[in-house]
Image 1 (cartoon, rainbow, N blue to C red):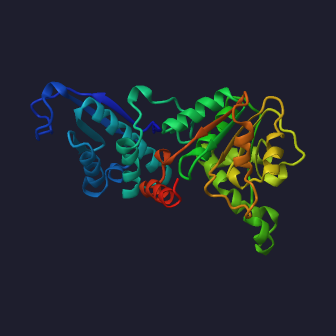
Image 2 (image 1 turned 120 degrees about the vertical axis):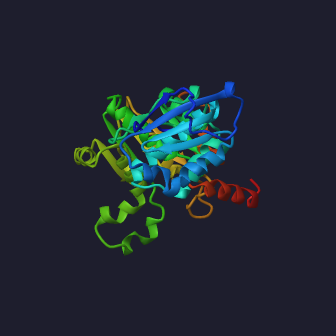
Image 3 (image 1 turned 45 degrees about the vertical axis):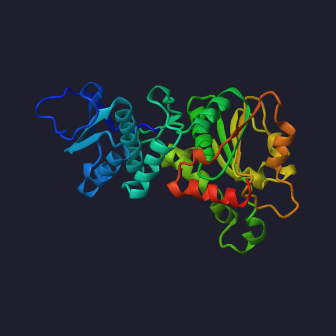
Length: 345
């Protein structure tokens, strides 16, 4: 889970004026904690009539939550209280990023805390990078953690799995972290523009305006991790580049963090071309979902072929994501599972 930097917990002692009045666990098993909310409007976090807090409380049946001003008082089992703290922290991150919370946001965060892999507090990973607003971007699932670990040990890592599992998000965070810590001198992000092959000429604008929609997800990720002014400056100086895969041909990239996104839409030849662009001091992450290939029929995906050829090569790693890593809307996981059943996967 990501920490917001906008709240802090303080252990309190039970007193005769405790707001908790319903029976819970035996007293000796209870933990009380007060979480102070800073920098946000409590109503936006709690919801009208505290409906978001009530939803969180219902997910942890042996806990009680009371909101007073900018403080949230928790009482329950130690593990549940720790989970609720993390849920509140994650909701603060979403609120600071979007300016509001929705019921879907609350359900998605709760799904990760209750139904998902559920990292224990002792296992909470260190931040990958901090956002301009002071929030911390951390891997949220075991496979995201594995991707971070592998990327720090191997020069080339393939992250393969369904949409919504945070592959691209984690990869971009690692790239930004490497740039900020001066482990690399530049970031190069690219995507195949398969769909553009037929329709590009019919779109308005110059080439950059035509190709930008296909690269937009990469811009979106960077905009969350860098201020707009800094990102513009980096792009003007080519410290950060976002380009179509075809533009990688003939280049040699040294001291760079290179990401190939949507790699299932790269042909076998394009994949080989991309992998051989790496120069000294560079590293690469390749992300993709082999179930969503847009290549013409009978065209082999370079991502599929790369695994057949490169798995087991020293310095190259493959990390497989699955529906348990989905961090988007709670229904995305159900949609993936439904398609898997139809396709007999």
